[in-house]
Image (cartoon, rainbow, N blue to C red):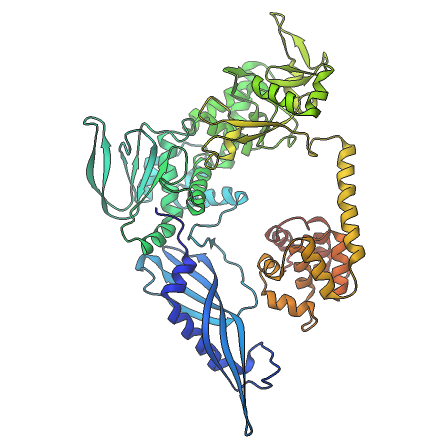
Length: 620
């Protein structure tokens, strides 16, 4: 695929006349009801459109190849007042929303407009898509998306633990799988064709590329190529391409609207779509990479099988410690579900077994024994384990780490900086110091934490989950001692919080009872403008401006939205709500929940706040 394609740009170019006519017709029929003010025109007798400019297009994914999309555009038009004495005219701009539908399998030749209205708010898409027609899927939605995929194509896997047969899955999706060497150097692990075409594959017997005709819905899988070498084999690759077919056909059709010769998506070993590192293709690869293992190992049935193996190996090994059985359990799960070890390991962490993080780790050419820690004590991109070189470099350049180790409080043992005490350190059979069993089960209690950053040339392609498996590879890491607030003593946590509170209090002191002064102050504090705020809370900037200036009476929900959009701490949001004359009624249940969110959810994004409130029937 050639690059990020813009659906907005395509719509603005191809359907300009249709959109123009829709707005022009609306003005002709509704000129007297327009929400505009003018010092020149007191009564609007007519409105004539001059020009339009498409600002945004919000797309909703529909079944098949259909889409619905709202086109937000800015219109320039002239309003007129006619009486017996003279004519008065004034030029105005206003945003409009034009609701449209179309079928990509028909090249949008069936494009239709269902409604035109003045833009007040965008509304919510049930299945939103990006401007490149890639589904918008958040990380927290992956399990539900994978489950819906299985409900449609492989329902039995949701109710009984089993290995997904990728060939059967492809058959149910009416796809044809062919094992073909796609490249001579195994750099491409899979390829899915969205159109009938003539393509080439690499013939190993003749060491040359051969031409072949393929049908739409054909998947090529290179049997010698493995995604990131240790992230799944042919089974994973087939499912990966099935996800592309199911989720990304519309993105491909948009590409074809620009380039009629487009036929395929090629997936490289390092991730990403061959020949492109743009955002849209990165998102498609991320989705396919993230969904494939979740489809292969549905969470509910995976947990059932994991519990069964844990019980079995605890009995066989005569231990009650979960960390002692974690590695054989992961291997058994990998074999059962026909996935790679690392995929099974990551899935165990998804299932809540953080003990899996410290398994199958190789550093400095040797195996690091399994270790565990308190749930939630480190993030995915953090580690207790580091190479001797990283340890030395950090000790030289990090004064805080050097201070901890200069006096012997922390020793470097088994690739960890561990506190020097008999509870954590012991002499092994050969006299070499090693971590005690207690230390390996309580790493957060006795070992220092380090942040990891990918520094190799594939940093922008490397997937976050791979931090968990640092086997020898072309991937290189930058290791930094984690001396931030997250794992700092309580005194520093208190100091940081006190500083935040002092800043908010200073802002509160500067706020007057003038709404415009307050908003200007808060926008400057957050380094935003009216347009930024409008986009953040999905409201017309002009509407916000009129609300602040007192031209319209704001609703409590609108005022709260402004507070959430600016991420205002309670001491500031309480003042702004009062200034906007939107005091919350403690006897109103909806107001009670809004007040709760203003106190405990204000740092979160708007969608998270809305999800929180929707649980209690509150819409903002």
